[in-house]
Length: 308
Ligand SMILES: Nc1ncnc2c1ncn2[C@@H]1O[C@H](COP(=O)(O)OP(=O)(O)O)[C@@H](O)[C@H]1O
Ligand SMILES: [Mg+2]
Image (tube, rainbow, N blue to C red; front, side, top):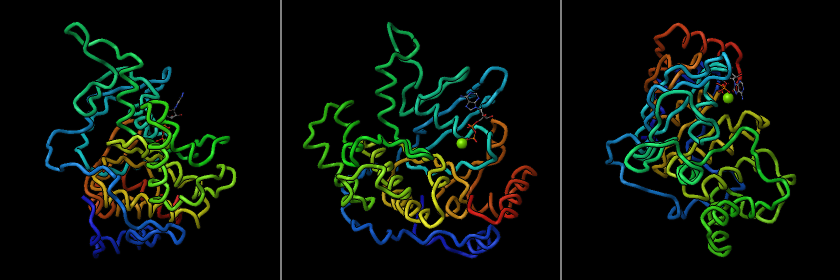
């Protein structure tokens, strides 16, 4: 689990090495008034020992290209994972599969004790229908690199749409919760604005609130700061850091922000060519990577001297 006191010699070394200063511990951006009121965030017992996500030898192909190659991964409830690795290594694909935006060509995925792509019928497992997929999808929220907000809807409507449409929630209760979530990400005062009137960092904070609106048990973040101007990165990282520290949601984060990955994650997975080449605690992966490909990747990032 993450905690607020992890800045140690290892951290200092790694952040120096990576040329990043790390992320300020859980401070909120200046325009983020809500530092309290976390009661609406899901907190669940951390004592469960069964994986919340169990990925068993999944394969994904696009034509002749094998993007994921018999990949297996268990994620425990509440775990915070950082997925790192070169472009094209399959990181986005794995998140999109969990969101059921992509199918798989082999293997199995279990989420919260149920098969993702299959369902029981008449005593056997059959391919999932749309209703099953929809129900499974509600357990998972995803935030994308390019926000994907509905441009013609207000900030508030962006957040209330899914609960009203998929859960049949009343406008009143959906709006109440949406305003709490917007408050948490420091965007309540922009509830009536359109996405075009917001900065990239503000859009991304709205996208995070929207993904939280269905109270998912699992949150997926796919390079959510990569499209932002550098000065807007921190406000989004701060919101994610706060979510990581103050909720026990299970989180999978794809990032090139190595300083942030170090502070955020319980476990770091290094992906290359559709496989997990190396995984471990952040301090081990960043300070003592074992595999040549992990070392080469980290060297390249350091040589780039940037927060990609
Ligand atoms: N819809 C698609 N059709 C064909 N190839 C795809 C598609 N989506 C992703 N790919 C390919 O799959 C590989 C993995 O992509 P991706 O998961 O996006 O990698 P990453 O997120 O690690 O950069 C890449 O080679 C990419 O070009
Ligand atoms: Mg990607």
